[in-house]
Every structure is written in C-alpha cells, then in structure tokens.
Length: 354
Image 1 (cartoon, rainbow, N blue to C red):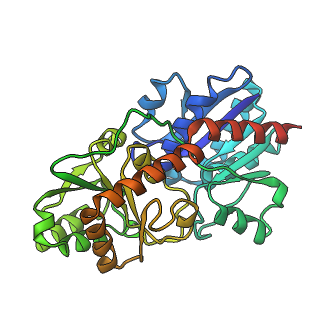
Image 2: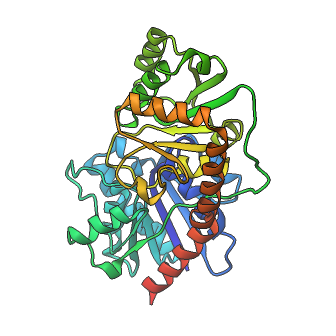
C-alpha cells in the first residue's frame, strides 16, 4: 500500500503538521505501508527528516503562491510522482492540495482522501471538499459532510487526532505555578480575551504564578501593547519549536478560540499528555474533547470574566484541578493516542482499496 500525503505547509506551530508527524511516524513502521509526504513550504521539514519520513518539497503546493500556472504544474507533478511510485491513495490535508489531488487522480487508478481539520467558510474559487473519501477529526465535521450531501456516510470516517503519551510525566507541583496559552496570533484564537482575563486575576494570585503566551503572528504587536497597558506581566516566549517540552513545565493550558472552525486542536491533546489542566472556550466541537468540571473547565467564548473565574477556581482548588487533570490524561491516552489513530487510518485505507 503506497500512500502519498499532500499538505500546504509544514510548521512547528501548526496543528495539521503535528497531526501528520505523529501519523506518518507510526505508519512508516508498518511492513505493508509506504508513506510519502509532499509539502509546499514551512519550517518543520527537519522534524520529519529526523524520523526518516520521505519528504518532497514542492512549493507549488503552497496556497500562498497559487496561480493558474502553478496549479496546473502541481497537478502534473503529483500525477508524475504517483505513476513513478505506484501510489494507491492520495491523502490531502487542506482544500488546495485536495483539489490538486482530485484533478491528478482523473488520469490515475488511485483513490483520494481528504482529512478535514475544521469547517472553513467556502470562500474562493476552489471547492473546500474535493475527494472520494473523507476523514473528520470530530463528530461535528462528520455530520456537516453527511448533512450537506458532500459524501455518503460510508465514505466518511471519524478518526480522532492522536499523539504519543509518556506515563512518566507527573502532575506538576511547581513554584511558581505556570499557565500557558499557545496558538497563532490571530483574532480567531482569542488571545486578547486571555490577556484581559489575566488582568482580572487578584494580585494575591497573580504574583505567585508565571503566565506565558507561546506563538507568533500578525497580532503580535497588538497583543504586546495590550499586555503592557493592562500590566499583566505575561511572558511572550515566541515561536516555540518544542511546545511539548514547554508544556511539561506548565500546569494549566488555556485555549481561548472564538471560532466555529476548530476541529480537534492538537495543542489540547499535547497539553493533556503533559498533564496540564485544560481550560477551553466553548468553541463548537469542544464537547467531543472535554466535559466541564469533570476533565477540564469550559468558559464562554470572548468572555474574559468567565475565563478569569475559571482560572481563579483552578488556582484555588488544587485538589480538584489535579483530579480533572488526571481524568483527562487517562481519557486522552485512551482516545487520542497515535497508535489508535494510525490503525484506524490503515483500516480505512484497506476498506477503500477493496
């Protein structure tokens, strides 16, 4: 079974790239599966090369350099690669590459698969759903595909994202306590809400904790100015290539997303694996991951008061916080591990090829 994976970019701080890393890392160890990865741009190629994952850089796959000539050339490149390597399935991880794959497959005896990591508004000329089969990373995405007649229920498979877990990582009991939010600096990620919530924490609590924002993006200047104005003292740690190691040193992870396009954020699973208490906004699909008050805390989107109250609860109820952290760790290890994700992909591929 020869699988070609296509994606727009490979970046250290990108959830799709993290998903691909764990998936291909495990798939390449299987005797009857050969994996190839073709990507457009990004800074994380070395991460894949270090795991001996076959990598081919094709800038024409990068959506940011799209043009009619680049699109046509990319189709021809994918077509030639598939013929040369006897590819059975082209598996795409964004709408641009899925359209390229679908056009290339017209001249080949291959099946196309598209993983949908979220529900993105249908803007632009290209169809955002363009494959023979689909993988949805949460139940909401699966229902969307079926209910909108994009594909029949037999052509859609729900497969959760997964990562590696290490039972040697313990719940932290550090001083100072560390809270972290990690994401791209975009409006949809709600980091302004996070900064405002931190400013509302009582000084008696804030002086004993270290608060970190990891990431980068177009709103960096705005976020830093907001932090300076509110005197929150947040540490901006930049584009951290080793987020898992950073999470090993923190105790509370916050995701403040204010959009309905989220799928199954890899950062939440990474936070769980590093035994962080997860405090999340109520973005659509979050109930696939967390149950409020049982294995994490959920606050209303764009509501800094609600987020502040959840953080105060977490900081002043350590025993309950540790219990929720442990419950979510076991749940995530059971449902969101890379071995399970890998085996479910292989089973789906085999069904497709039959």
